[in-house]
Length: 114
Image 1 (cartoon, rainbow, N blue to C red):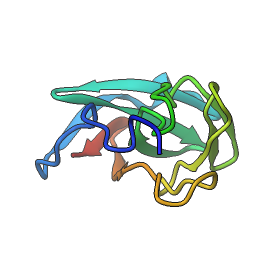
Image 2 (spheres, rainbow, N blue to C red):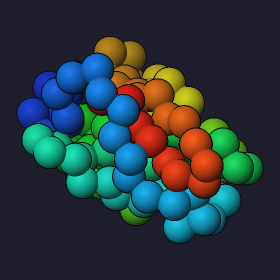
Image 3 (cartoon, rainbow, N blue to C red):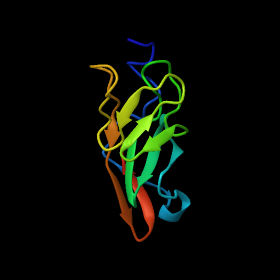
Image 4 (cartoon, rainbow, N blue to C red):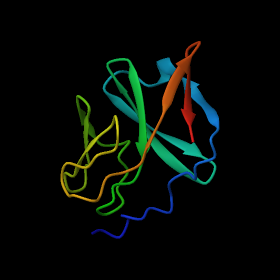
């Protein structure tokens, strides 16, 4: 396991919906880093559907928001680990999935439940 499998930079769950920006700010097929109090998440637009997962790859801590997206899969730029942006499942190594966060769009605003 990499040094980040227990990521202390992920936001703590508080049961709050946080508005993070306009939906038009993240084009389809792209990711964005979202700074939240106590951490950050990677936000992805996959064909108009928005998903959020922990931003740091558990292998070596590289930011996932800056990585390549292939459909629902994000591939870490550092060593090629792959994750499903819909649920955080890791396809590369068992037991190293990342946490996912519910995302809704209301009146054009992206909101993440943390």
